[in-house]
Length: 322
Image 1 (cartoon, rainbow, N blue to C red):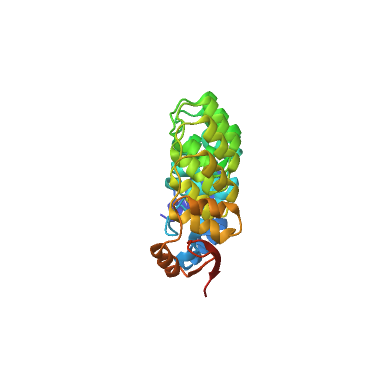
Image 2 (tube, rainbow, N blue to C red; image 1 turned 135 degrees about the horizontal axis):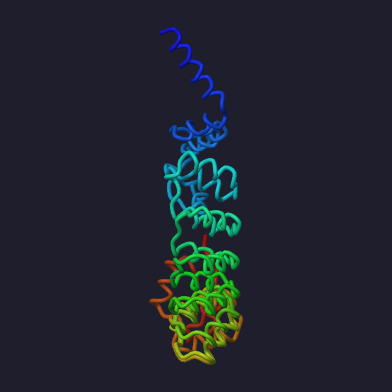
């Protein structure tokens, strides 16, 4: 018996003292490598952060600090491949398609390639989010090496952010349909080159919101282009928004070239920004003179109006009451 016990002890000692055998045994244990423990300790500490301070979660593509993928996605956001590899060895169930999405969102082409080579799952969201953030190299890699493709959000997101090269690549190599939102969003954000490309190369067109957005944000060149080349037109929101934001040149163009007109708000806002211009007089003649009703509403908004001429409701000065 003593001999058997001694032999067993000797065999056990040989196993635990053999690095390769011990590593193989440990790989089946449910635990973490020692160097990963501080990361999990920091995660637990972060859970005490007030919810109002959790905007940093958005780039990680998770919505809660209690998400068990937090440490992994934080490593992905830092492109810490060594940490990612050790985490995956310990907790392979943490890997979802959002891991590839997260790497694509940050434009880490080497990490995307690594995930692809190790058969990480992927979805169409990966190309969508890479396009939205302008990572053309990631878009190209996913197109050439993956089968998931993308959705209409890819070209819409790229157009909204003004990534013309990405828009051009998607147009040339992908066949997913998009919507009028691509040109609408590009117009809103002032990406004139994208608006022109979509107009001359795509069929989805835009909606009246495109000119409304462009006018409201003061993008006169886009407003002129849409007026000349498109037929969707705009709404009264275009002139109202331009006046509200002080884009008098846009208001003037719409007043002189378009027929949609405006609401009474345009007159009031134009006067606030530049009461001495002839544009105010024009808008005043455009059946938007101050009436007792509009005067009352303006006072409710803490604006004080005064008459400049007898027998005419003309806004002469504006004083913001405090």
